[in-house]
Image (tube, rainbow, N blue to C red; front, side, top):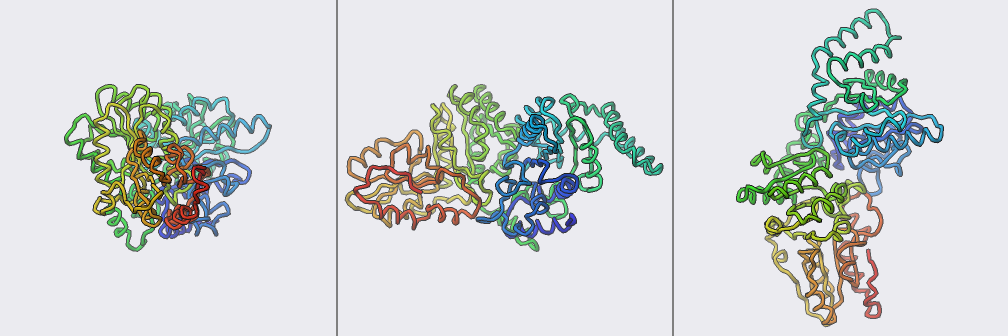
Length: 589
């Protein structure tokens, strides 16, 4: 078995080359070691939530050699995935689902009269997700589950809400800790190791008296902890006791995010999910990241600027203040900023109440996490036609974060919702303009934009609605936001027109009808799934987007080439299109 130091060195080395989730995985190394030593990962079901803390688990479960391909095209994923290894009991890209999956496994085990352990490892911020609390409410009927609560005092941004304060009280209970330490010294002096299980059960009762940790007891869980999450022996002892219990157990483990690399320990937020960097000069990476003019930053600056003129504007985040660019807004207007923790469904309903109460709600959420709140968007916001602005970050392919985080489905999921306006900017200036328009609209608006650097609007083509290359019966290429420049390049190559589809819904039907009447062929390019996307809705002759399959991890340029979304592939497909095939409207990739 590799030592914690060796595993951390390997994680740090590979993440510095490929990028990835660093601080969270560094903090969970000893948990992974203790789990590997106390359980059989090929037989027991170990469910990580969220998977960004599971790099050590990958190394320890047969993927040490392949770890050098982390997040690379055709390499191992940055998240647990059962298709990659039987040791990964469930896909683990979104927070809050591990306990529900674990209860499913436990119930299946009971119904089939099988014998194996079911373990869920969740973060302190994930446990307050609505799905987790729903699972807690049903745990008594499921059968025994061991829940490992990795309490590192962090989500991706700093934690919010009452539950993190409750855990802090559990850890800081002075009377309990004094009693625990005295009992430990007494037990060692008397060599009463055989009483370890009894002592743990006795401690649970004592803690209920002193710390009121009966919260977990009310849901049918035996509470063990707090346990030092960087002490493998202590973790193994706690897991051994948990295995012997007849009912579900929660093992409260306290860790430090970024453990082992002082740079990440001091600033776990910046080093949560960095790109490639030089280990010897981490400051250079932070400086580059600070100066990068990303879409997230463009959104944050635009919102803060507009909020200075309108005190009704409020901003909401689900544990992603830093990732979505809301740091400036939160600092300038703390009373108008709300971080609800990892609870997207609650955030959307909360935003609807704010809007109904007279405020202008702006939600900042990644496309992959928008999926978790579609019901609230439809039921609580759209039906009432409330002025809520949903700013969808990371819309489109996100590259190396892979299948669980590709933001390809937001157009298809939301285009059918009545009252909802959907738009996508082509540059930072356009983003601010669309945001301003949305804040003045009476109903809900969804603004989507991709990951990466935002064009500033200095390039001539970013101000041009259409690029004309006269040719009779040529091509009109509609493109959403970040695909507009690519459409311009394609139009120049094939002899056609590139049209910027600023509004996806409502769509400019008048221009489309005019082009069709003129005998033009219609193509569409979008950074989203073709099924249910823009091209499908306008009946394009050729539709260029992501196919009806889950897109794996890899660099964006590599994925575009593999799926024929690079300029050369699109040009070749258009040039091979014959008049006889016009109007068949096949889905092309």
